Image 1 (cartoon, protein in one colour):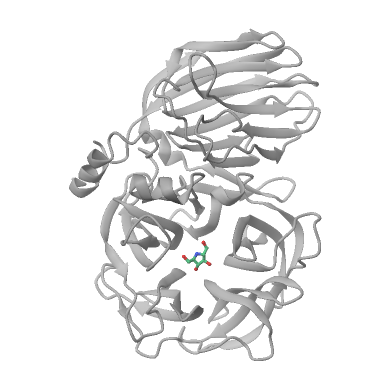
Image 2 (tube, rainbow, N blue to C red):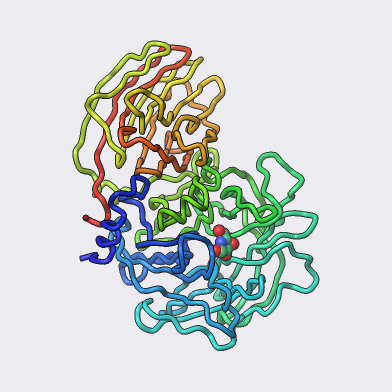
Length: 484
Ligand code: DQQ
C-alpha cells in the first residue's frame, strides 16, 4: 500500500488543482525528470526535488518506482547535497546508466553557481547511493571554450566506450552539447561539440543561447537530440533535432518543438525499457505565480509517460503509453453530432476534471472546431481545444481558462495540417490543472489551467465560422494513481 502517498493526497484533498493521476511528490517542489531507468523489471524515476518547500532551491534527487509505468511508489530521497563537496549547493539534473550491473548516476553538482559532473553508485538496488570520492569527475569545462553555462548530461555506450554530452552555450554563437569519451565513466576525454546551434537563426526553430538537459538516442533509423532551450535565465521549450550521426557529429535534418505547450514540457528525458521502447517524461511547469505555489504547498508535475517514434516527416512523435488504459473507469460514448456554425453543444452526459477523451471530428476547410473542457455552466470559464484548417493550426486557448488574472492565459499553437479526407483525432488527458493534448499521432500541447469555479467541470463541442461534424467521442473518468 502506498500509505504515505495516500496520506499526502488526503492532505491536499481540497486542492482543486492538484492532479490525481500524474506523478507528483508528496509535497514541495518538483522539476526535471532524472535518472530514468528500467531496472530488474521496475521503472525508476528520479526527479529534481526541494524538500524545503515548493520553490527551486536546495535541490535533492527525489525517487519513485513503478512496476507498470502508471502507478508510482515514493522511495526515500536518493541524492542529498553535501556540505564541503562538489554538490554542496544542489544535486542538479542527470542520468542513470547500467555500468556492467552497477547502477550509476551522472549528475551536475552545483557549487558556488557552477555545475560540474559528479558520479554516484548503488549496491542495494538503487535505494541508497554512494558518491564517488573524487567528484567532480570533470573538474572544469574545456579551457579553450567561452561558455554561457555548462550542465546536465546524456550518457550512452557505443564501440566499447562511454560517451557523454554536457549541455552548454558557446558565447556569441548558441546552445551546444559537448561530447566526451571514457572507458570507466570516471575519467573523461573531451572530443568536440556534437552540434552547435545558432542563437541568431529563427527558422526552422530558434534554439536559444544555451541547451539544458541534452538527451541523445537512436530512433527508427536516425538520431535524435532533444534539448531544453534556455536564454538569459529563462526556460523556453524542449526542442527536438533529428539527424544523421557520423563521426560523433550530428547533422540535422529536421528541427521542431517537442511539445507546443513550450515550457510546460521542459527538461524532457527519455530511456529505453525492456520492450525496446523509447519513453519520455517531461516536467510540466506551473502556470501560476510563486505566491500561489507557496500557498498550495506543492509545485511541478511529471508528465504522463510517452512512447517516442519518428513520423513520416521525420519529426519525433509522442504517444501516451498504452499502459495508461489501466486508469480507465466509467466510459461514455457519443455518436455522430452535426455542429452548426457558432454553436456550442454542451455535453449533458459527461463532466469532470479527471478525464481521458478520444474525439474524432471532421473539420471545415474554413473556421474552427473542437472540444471545450473545464467549462462553467455560464461559459465564463472554459478551455478550448480547437483546430483551424485554413491556418493549419491546433490551438489550446487558455484566454478564458480562469477568472484568476494572476495565472497564465496565453494560447498555445501547434502546426498541424491534415491530409485530404483525414479527420481530426484528439486524445486528451485532463487532470485538474494539467492538460495533455495529443493530435493525430503527430503533435502535442501540454499545459496548465487553473479554473476558479467548482462548477467548471463541463464539456462541449464547438464550431466557429463554419459547420463541423463530430464522428464520435469516447470519454473515461480516470482513477487516481494513488488509489485514495
Ligand atoms: N534545472 C536543473 C538543471 C537544469 C534545469 C536544476 C532545467 O540541472 O539545467 O534544477 O530545468
